[in-house]
Amino acid sequence: MISDVALENLRTLVGAYCKATGKPLSAVSKEMYGNSSFLSNLFAPNDKFKDKPASITIHKLDEIVEKFRKKWPENKPFPALRPLFMHRSERR
Image 1 (cartoon, rainbow, N blue to C red):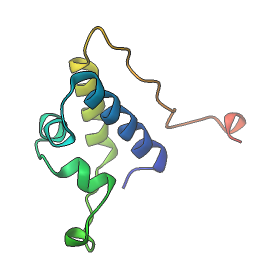
Image 2 (spheres, rainbow, N blue to C red):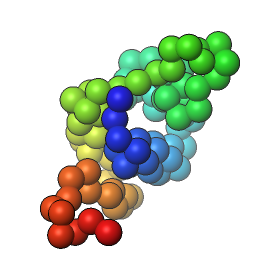
Image 3 (cartoon, one colour):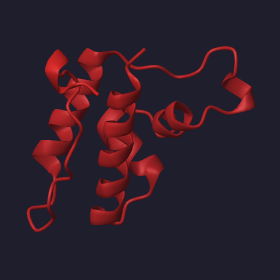
Image 4 (spheres, rainbow, N blue to C red):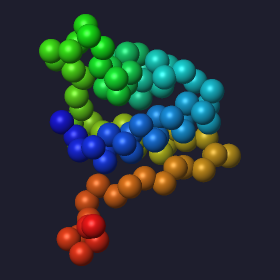
């Protein structure tokens, strides 16, 4: 399972991409992950999958973020993301 910060970054990317392209979440999920319901289940698991919620590895997350970078609309700014790793002196 990925960290809360990584999941927040993914939510930020997905929301901004949906807004920038006008695509619904299911289309973005299919485009980036290959499964139209994956992202909605990852962000808000429903009762059907309560015992086995969707999860994602940091490696797969990295692949998806790279897909977003490559497919990002040129006329739209890429959103700022929180760093996943910080030096101890940067933590609060």
